[in-house]
Image 1: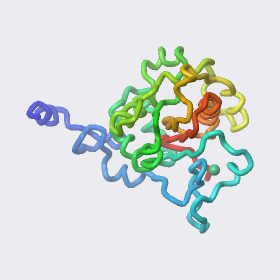
Image 2: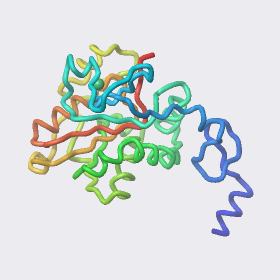
Image 3: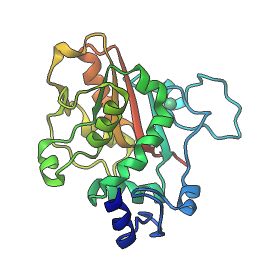
Image 4: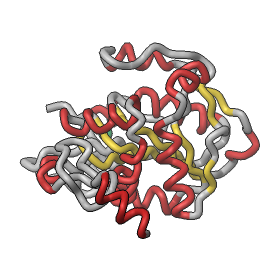
Length: 238
Ligand SMILES: [Zn+2]
């Protein structure tokens, strides 16, 4: 404690975005906090995309995209809208070794997906291919999945699902291309483990949902009863 106080005096914790001095490592300044768009109801009961506030929608309403092409997962939720600000945060977390940001992200995810966490038997991350893991040194989704599993007394099962094909980054691809890119990229290590289980799959960003949907397909084929998705941020079309 004394050491922490001394350290804070020498190197006070700063907001990772604005650089303002804040109370604790990973904390955001009030100004930045107010600019984050947290996702709240109403949203699609399946993929979690927020409905515009102008429309009155009933509980359990499903968006046109999910009606046209029903996902393999049962439901997906995300904490915040993926925009310029949250993209900056995720990129620092993912590529810049700013791992303390996990401490900001996990409470957001708990708020957005408390019911999905409660329902889960297993919590696991979207896996990286080993070649990418080697390059990046850590799986950003695994750190979040493990933190949530430990805190909520769930089984953390990072090795159930594996990426068997090194796919090129989804980056600038369109929705159709993304689907093709990740097709059959995942496989199950321990087929016996999943029978009748509820799985919560964790990712940092959900864009078209093609990656998590392909993961959910593999998990369901291996016997998982229910697959939910929880991510920090999700892309929302304007
Ligand atoms: Zn939907």
